[in-house]
Image 1: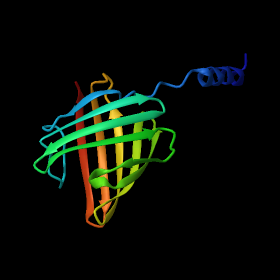
Image 2: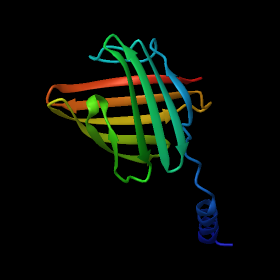
Image 3: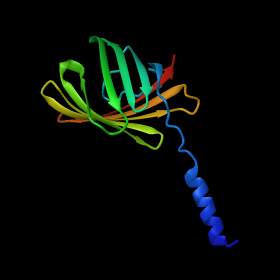
Image 4: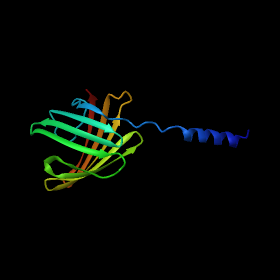
Length: 155
């Protein structure tokens, strides 16, 4: 057999393998306040996120308590890049797109908080053991830029 033929067979065999499954973020998650970084923003007193992930749909219910009170934000995304609309904090609406970048889920959101337009990008990654989600979050608005790193543990 020729070398070219063998290379072709190996390439075709590799192409026929199924793509690796994307991470599934479903579960009840609690933010580890000691490992998370909140940047210029005040850390909450507590934060939990319930995620339901049935590809391509991802829903999240975030509950947060802070010195300003308790908040709940529910959001729905689709990982196929289609735009979704959700109600944001403060009653305004946000629009988001979500898509895969390898094993990371990238969620890009635009909205308005008070009189300020903002953009937020989140990169969700799941640990190999499935027990930790890391969310790297960046904000941009006329008030400036900010970054956070949330470490969530499965409950």
